[in-house]
Image 1 (spheres, rainbow, N blue to C red):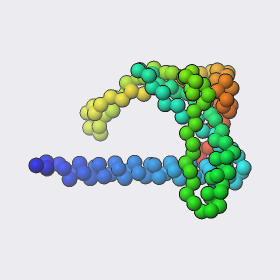
Image 2 (cartoon, one colour; image 1 turned 60 degrees about the vertical axis):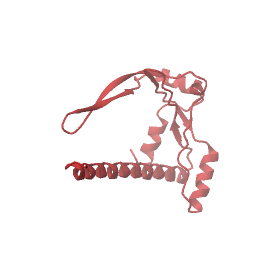
Image 3 (cartoon, rainbow, N blue to C red; image 1 turned 180 degrees about the vertical axis):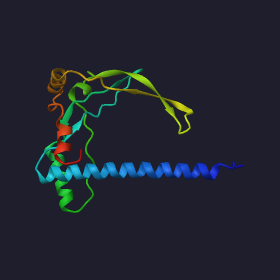
Length: 161
């Protein structure tokens, strides 16, 4: 038998679903704007290492940046000219992560609370400790990546950050 607060919960969950859908749509729009900017300016886009290795109580937080490649850029340009929907940015993994040399950080518990302050659960997340610029450049070089900070620079140049 349904409880009295079921319609209220349904409205709340619908609002959450709509908000999440709006966030995803905005992220896709921003990514498309970045790709448009790159195509207009003949720039090869950069993405962060997509490694998601998570052993026990640690996560790989590798921040090596990799170029998406000219082949992907040409394919997207061709799709844009034809008016087709474009492929999403590829998820690339750096050479070091592919060979098991992950940049691991310990996870920390994060409490998830509802609007009334009740604890709904606990999530575990790893946050990358800021390394020295020299260490970041060394890892990027060994991983076959691009100098650190290039992805943020591209977002700024495109006027999206």
